Image (cartoon, rainbow, N blue to C red; front, side, top):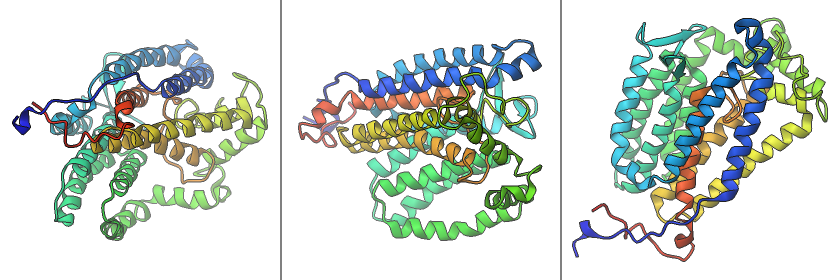
Length: 385
């Protein structure tokens, strides 16, 4: 039999039920908190306290449909679609910068509108970049490590630049962190990764120190009270929310920090609203859900039937968990302030949709874990016809 005609002998089972429950627990809690955090603002601005909730529910329905689709869509098909997906991402990131096509808000052009819905291309760019890196470092081998590192980094660097032009520093940095983590996890020689880091220092100097408002955020991170009514105001108000919430919180919907105090209470700083309304117990429970998501994702990766599935499962897991802990780090003052949503929880259709797609891909990989546990190696068995 010719190699090109080798039959796919993998057997598909049931998806990981624990991950399923975790995803819907996070999304359900997100809908509740999205309404609680946005109701007052929505009533004041739009005359409808359900304005944001109705849109988030619509995105949840779209996201659920996407999860079901990707749960049943063989993840190995991404190997053939990577270049096409990258092309679509490049086009979307360019379109968002064109006046009249891209939708601007607060000095940033990050969205493309489709009627009453709008999408944020940078969120989908992260998803596609993860798939691209996974393909490069799990399926393609070369003796030239320099080229194997530089070529993917040039692609990621171009997407990074397009996101920075919007500007969206938080998402761009999230993309870089994800990329480096995936390359490291793939087993690529650490010496080259360290060299890349040191070569990147001048770039970070230009992007942070030479841009006043970003450097001020670093100063504010070190001492928020240095400018308590300016750049440090957001973090201080977040601290106040945590203090008011205490152990059990003031009650769902009864928080006051979300009313003209916390910036973006239903998006970037929703974790502070959670801290005030459901207290330390609620925030710890949410953290445990993300930790459980991470554990299930890594468990799926370890039992995946091939190297592409293993690294892809790690990538989809990190896509959600890294962003979650960056957001939580910002809100708790552990990281400098940057605008990045909390997956599943913050209001925002693109973030919710990409989180559901990533979860669907993870669930699809989990459907093949049973045969992997029998010790069979499918890296050499599965070939496209």
